[in-house]
Image (cartoon, rainbow, N blue to C red; front, side):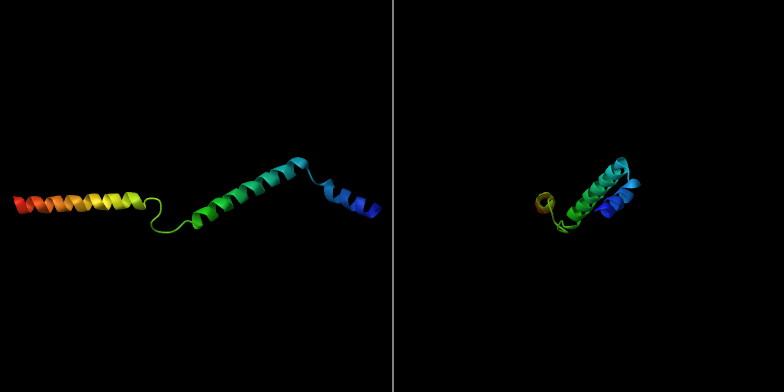
Length: 75
């Protein structure tokens, strides 16, 4: 047991609790960055949340074109 205690003491001799805390904070921050990257990568490519907005815009453009054609026919 004495050897284990000496080995632990030697291992901890150069450790500073503030450095360990800073290291853990850095690790946590990097894990959060990795999670954000993973979330972005896993989003579907192409049409997403803006699909309805794009469809509404397309319908509006089509209606404008139709109105323009009707005016040309009438006038």
